[in-house]
Length: 324
Ligand code: NDP
View 1: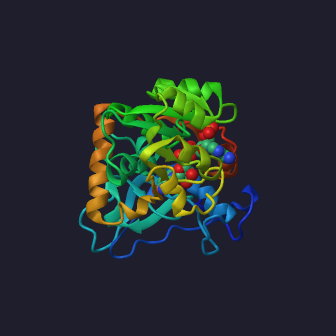
View 2 (view 1 turned 135 degrees about the horizontal axis):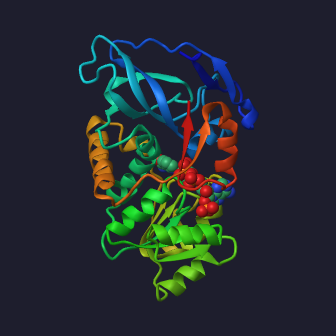
View 3 (view 1 turned 45 degrees about the vertical axis):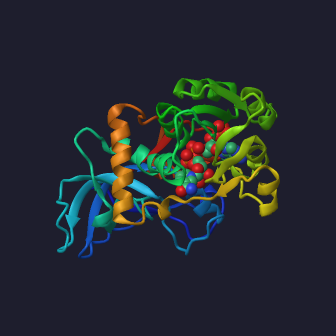
């Protein structure tokens, strides 16, 4: 077996704080399983842990999801066996092996590969949360979708479209705009060149959109607010450009009884029932073809710094896989 290792940080900073460290895998506790990882999903949140935007206790092994093959299970585990293929959300997946709670591990059906699972679990559950749990998307809705060809966006756009939602995408380049249209968006606005809210009004007969799925944060906040129809929803679920400044409730009133929410996936899948509901919806959408894994790029785990640089500089499209 190649030497097991983890990628660890002991201080916040640039990509050079990501250090490869030899580490034997931890044996599973009674309710845990140990997995030899075959694919790790890169998520923007991993960069927030590295930079300190979301503080973590040091030393810290980043990584929020993974997939692989169960090697060993604890005495109390009944639902998993060595050899099972699984995927999971969890902290510390930048490693050759992951040991964690067996109850949170999803056994993969034969038709879902580990790469597909690592590309879609966290991001697809986020799309499910946005479309079904935070606010039920309805046929006839018009939605503004930011970063439409990114990890979450490349699942959110086709899924919303399949539900009968008209998607207006906002992205940074003509190439990405074409990709957003291919994913199902009816229109695409260029964030750097266009006045986003004015374009939205022009595309909606002056009405505005029902909802803005905003993962860009700081740079998008004003345009999200100004693009909504009265009683529209600003679903602020990420900070790719930086954290959003505080907003006075009176602004929501002045713009027509708007609704602002700031959901985080872990509030929706914290219970076994929530995770099971999300998993069923996600695997169902993959099976019907409403969505599919868009793996835009792969990096070796040893080269994790390049993966962070790529996602932080908007060079990635779709999901990014990290291969141990
Ligand atoms: P993406 O693959 O979408 O990558 C980020 C994208 O954000 C870029 O490609 C770019 O798209 C856009 N962007 C806009 N401004 C900037 C900027 N200044 N710097 C870098 N990128 C920028 O990442 P993910 O799919 O992994 O995550 C997207 C966001 O969603 C993140 O903020 C993440 O934290 C959040 N998220 C939140 C969850 C929750 O539970 N609330 C769960 C999962 C993700 P473009 O070029 O098209 O503008």
